[in-house]
Image (cartoon, rainbow, N blue to C red; front, side, top):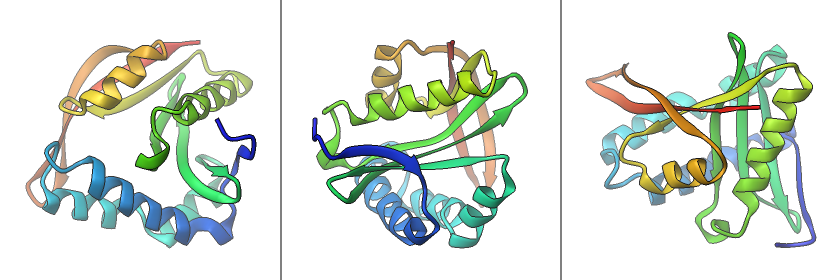
Length: 166
């Protein structure tokens, strides 16, 4: 693992880079799991400068960037949800996967959840996203329920809800 690795709050100046990174990661990872049409729809829906900036300024959602040797290689977004911390996004560029960076980001979110008084971290993951499900299981997460959510334009999210008690 690179010595120049750090996780820090997302800088406003880096929002555009995170949006670009999300597009690269999603277009590489999700084909075969969801359609390209759904990928593009969800990127447009969830990754806009205005939305990210509003979440960052709200104090009710946190964005972090994972930086290696000055380059953003991943990001996470998490927020309170009832008695748990909801991990809404955690992505690492495919060139840096399976090197421990995702695990370090996950541990960082868990530490933040503990620090803020939450007893668990919960997340949703597509039922067909076998690589991510395996990574979460490896880090102590278990499936606690299944959900199907209509997200508009005829698209649905068919997910497992996974949780780790802290």
